[in-house]
Length: 313
Ligand code: NAP
Ligand code: 8YV
Image 1 (cartoon, protein in one colour):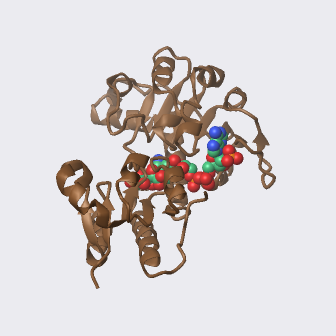
Image 2: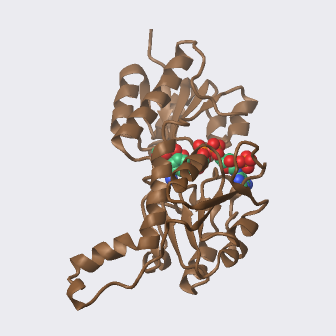
Image 3: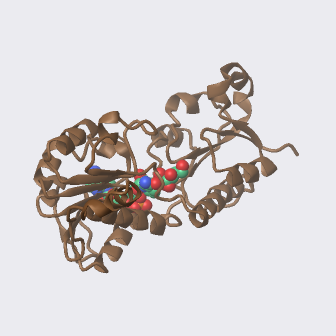
């Protein structure tokens, strides 16, 4: 029997690509590189393999009459038009849980990095500045107040880690949780006004676009730090740049950016930021687990078995 044809819409981690190539006929980003060739094979495509940053819009889904499944290598699926897929009865899968620890670790790492100015200190030593005097003092983290925007799988894992630092923890979500003792605030602005560190870990997409806006940053205030490990779109990036330039907030540590991998020059030249290139889940161990889960979902579908991790509809 011939192998099912699948369209890969992202530059994938090579071990996942190799696994896919062994089991499927893989068309790697052909819709972008060779539209004429894509038009010829589009009627045969039965699966799409995406990642957390991929775009799978309605216009692409509409071009694929035989499409049966969309699999995301990542927990966030804000780039996939789930409504368009659902209208056609096409399930979407993602990779929850297996990356929770890494992303939570990275959220804490970024909080410590900006508070204690670890990248700045590293540069200070390398530049030979130590003999000329000590660095300016930093901000203590233990015992400080943490606000978490989005208390889902990763938000809760961040909270657990922050408890180890003796932090007082508060959060905001659209629906107040009944399974936590953390203090609830009904909005990001109300939360920001009460904390020293504001950690953003919601999904991306239209519903959260610009959730962290100028008003939230003003509430966070000149001693407050913003950490974003969610999606760049959740923060109003021009408002953040203005707030950082004018000391409206003390600093920001960002793993994700609106328009990434391009990062605005205005952000890159600032001293009160720590910037990382969307690496929160990027360890060998977690990428292996994500690849196994993404591949497992495709295999399950084409073997007529239940999907392992279908996104809610
Ligand atoms: P999850 O378990 O679904 O949690 C999402 C949380 O966000 C829930 O508590 C949800 O509560 C809350 N939320 C949703 N919309 C909100 C809004 N408008 N205002 C406030 N809270 C809101 O998801 P997860 O597994 O923790 O992952 C969260 C996100 O992290 C992913 O979707 C992805 O975008 C991001 N992520 C980034 C990386 C990276 O590499 N940087 C890696 C993995 C994940 P309510 O529904 O009650 O509002
Ligand atoms: C990955 C992510 O960077 O899971 C997510 O939502 O953003 C990250 O884990 C991504 O999916 C791999 O490209």
